[in-house]
Length: 151
Image 1: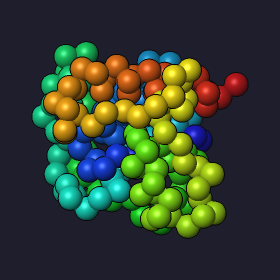
Image 2 (image 1 turned 180 degrees about the vertical axis):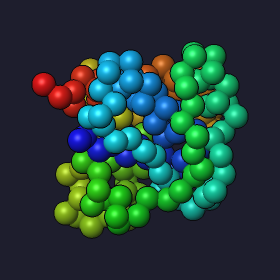
Image 3 (image 1 turned 120 degrees about the horizontal axis):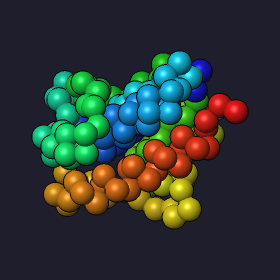
């Protein structure tokens, strides 16, 4: 079982979008029994809050089922459990390296590191551009699936 945890600042926009997209891609490729997918935050700001309405709107627009989720913060047990801890930007990775013991740092990467074009995924909380975020997250999830797909 391949265990993936998506991370963003608040766990209501990007990481929940990635969680829903990755679950959809896994199901579409008939790989449900091969993956465990979840998401969490680096901050405590949004704990308990549902997925942002902009993320919900964009996923519905694309006919991607929404994984129901309430924001939570990453914890040490997550670092132990998950094989991949995928941040959305440099700030997420910086926070994760401070929050998690060094023995888990090899599990950290940014989502776009799993594509041909590296970089950060802009936070639509600040930009308001859920369309751009969707394109980046979809590309990242497709790359991650190809990279981790059981042979």
